[in-house]
Length: 316
Image 1 (cartoon, rainbow, N blue to C red):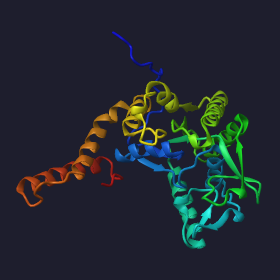
Image 2 (image 1 turned 180 degrees about the vertical axis):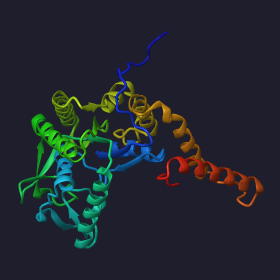
Image 3 (image 1 turned 120 degrees about the vertical axis):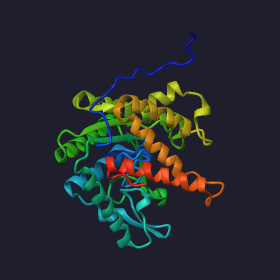
Image 4 (image 1 turned 90 degrees about the vertical axis):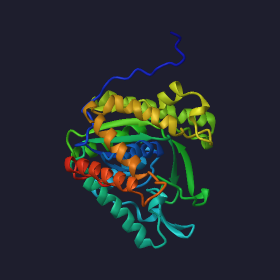
């Protein structure tokens, strides 16, 4: 048989993820892609409570806030584009009033703290090694929020800086939750706005840093999402219209690979049941008043009741 595709070798990892696991996902937009799949299948998961965070120092900073209570510098709260922007988090938390932005940050911190109570797996996805230093404080920030570029200095984080940020982040998490499993990934999204060569330099630093961490922390693991995208899915048909982001087909493919490595096989039938309910909820009837549709809704309610009896936390 002809081989038309090279395969990234994968080995099963553990402890496995099941419906009793509690997950925290932090990092780039690819963390949200995978997080959306976990939430679709109703796993207990919290995805990017501080919004998308592309680089390791930004993730480290929010970990320090949540675990150690370290506050973001007050100077990193700026008014721009008619909103109060916090340079250490994503614009998802920006609000028109300063107090509202601060409250949004505290809400994110609180929800993360709640998630850490019983968390079993933390998945961290790094997007880029390029970062911005805010000149006023000489600190690396998470997001420029379209504040004028003259206020920042663009830098490329070296391997050691990234590795140290990851090691400190993992140490903070494990100080709060001993035994928590940390899964590291590198986002397959190419940051071509930085430049083609610059993107490759960035990804090289991320991959080198991650493997430096794995050499020091055998309890951490790596899932090769970047390598799967670059090698197994190297055709542009697996990209979105911008030719940068993986499309839904590619994300589904990588998700299936992730399941094969990390998700307990015993829960696969339950995932199918959840998917059936989700499909039923998305169904648009031809005649909502028909007996056939009423019967369909009764069966759907029975399926939901069955799942919620087993897993009371599930909400549909």
